[in-house]
Length: 109
Image 1: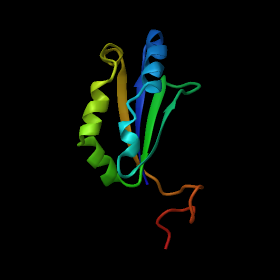
Image 2: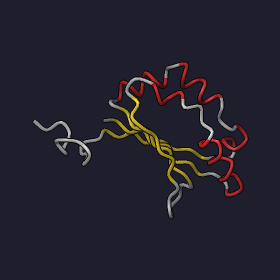
Image 3: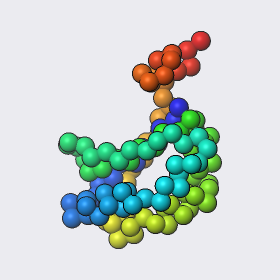
Image 4: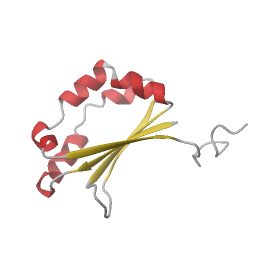
């Protein structure tokens, strides 16, 4: 499993607008091969005001999506004004343990 995380630092005045954008998302990613789920997280504290997480069967599925028409359309719908005032940083993770799967430690032989 592969997880891609975007940490967003959104001005307080834009929180509601950003959250509304995600409630009204296009959902084009939902049917993309290898896509598992996404989450929008609002941390209790820290630098980020929101964190957007997508989970994929593997890194290659994520790469294919990033090059796809579905991705282009989804991102063309981003609220430009809000995003122009937002700082974004990204992290990528290979999942090595997931308690929802057997065996719990992925890649175990």
